[in-house]
Length: 93
Image (cartoon, rainbow, N blue to C red; front, side):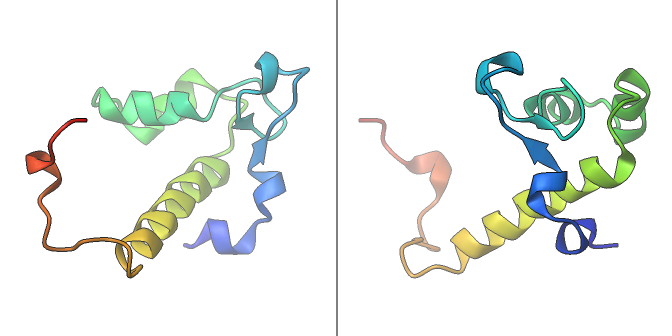
């Protein structure tokens, strides 16, 4: 539905030293944005995440995912991104 493009980023994410020491949280909550990604990474559905954190609105969570996708696509389209390089074969420094 493209919530990200319809919402101001300031209505999706809040960063304040007074709230969790400046950790990015969903606007109007104390729920860290990273918790959404941790839930998804652990196989927990968006529906379950929203049930676990009822103060987060569905449109906020979707907007975060759309924002992330938009930035990943932007990076992958940049001239600095080596499309032929396999990230799993990169050598650690």
